[in-house]
Image 1 (spheres, one colour):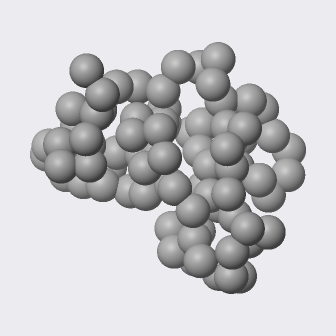
Image 2 (tube, rainbow, N blue to C red):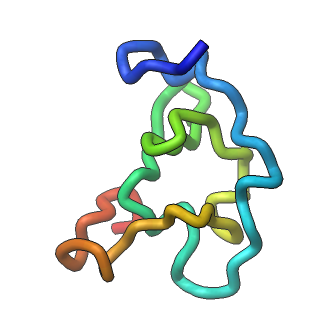
Length: 84
């Protein structure tokens, strides 16, 4: 079953660890256009990727990215509101 943007992010699958690669630059999930925070049950923050429609493990948004990372080089500066 393919996740839908209409589904609550809590129901999205966890991103496969083989998809996310280590990064020591500013190109990490946190600075990607597709990165979002959502409040889950009991107001626990969920880290999500809108592009892959999946959940990002806690802390991985700071040190990992996927090959589809899209940030300032592909759009206007400051577009990633989550990193502000």
